[in-house]
Image (tube, rainbow, N blue to C red; front, side, top):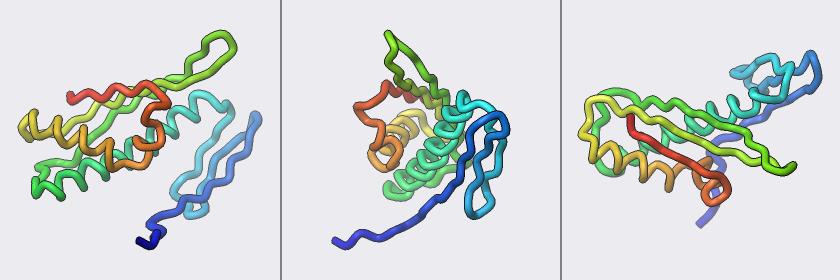
Length: 131
């Protein structure tokens, strides 16, 4: 099977008091005077966007029509322990007007589809809640 590039994101980040992050396509242009919590917020936003796409794909694969778009509230925390740093994540997922059992199946399946979920699997504690 031949690999096919689907998307690419290019950003330029500058640190310091006048720090910023800009994407080459102009969709991202924000000030970053402090690296944290900006890094955690950006990671949560990127992961959530990808995860929503994975939920929609999981639904399409199962021929399930989602009455409304999925919503995700992400909390990414930076934690420290004896000079070591690590992340934890919680994704609160809302799938309106869909049976809870089916919704739970979709959010679990999405972790097997989403590249961000795959990247962090086994590396950070992740809690996913259907709300």
